[in-house]
Length: 362
Image 1: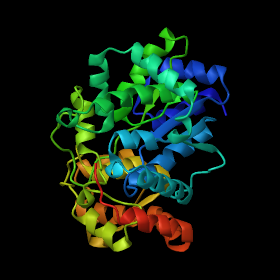
Image 2: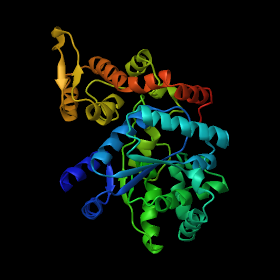
Image 3: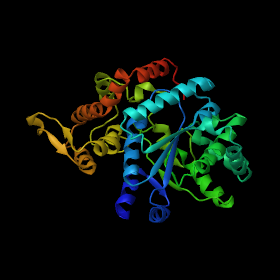
Image 4: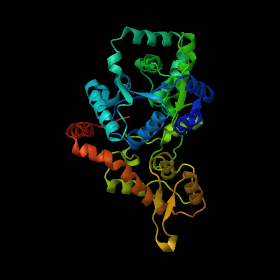
């Protein structure tokens, strides 16, 4: 595969790349660079975890990127996920692996690693301390929003360790590329600053988009000083708000019901979650997107390009109700293999049962 094709595949994943020139150089000098993403085990898997993650991984694999999935169980403990119970966090991590298997991720092409396995490593903690020694207290505090909490919620001393650990993760995993969400860019930028100071390297950042919840764009809530990023984080699909979240376990009926109630005003593109799911999931997963309509309303429409859909919707040529029905049908087709895996696989079913009964927290 030629360089431009590889670069374009990665650009499909990255909403923001820091920097594209460095990424190009990396691809020119390394046939199989290493990327990583970290996940705090907590709660049931939404579509952005079980579907969107798999789509991005597929593009990265095609581009020749080796990928490490970092199950950040100790980070979840610091962040008080699952009530701060490490055993429950571990169970959710095992459940995450089953979701990845069911979503179509080629597990032979990714490496799954647990943060807990690094906790007995003096070398790991040395990296954490070196990062901390080269980070001011004010800078560490500014990075705390990577934990997905507003500044009002950040009041524990242990939370200051979180960005130091996440930054050290990058170098512990020997990652050339940080492939996390836009909400994690502060830790990644910190890694680019401290890496060269410590004789390490400057990782490339490929930040993917944060999918919004069914209610659409929300007022920024103070997660980040950058208003654009704050709006994304504030509007993200959150498993702690089930009524605005699509899960990979939702039934066909539940998907249709949730999509039907989603924010999707006629002709409005900005802040429209239904169009967003089309752009980031449906058009990247399916070869053709069909919108079925009665002949009196124009008949069925087959679309191969998201931009064409956006234009037609903004011009009023596609009605929100027709779009919602088509999106619900397409998402159900994409989600159904995961749902079936957890129905048929005994181990997966048991993990789902255990995680499902736990109280969902942020």
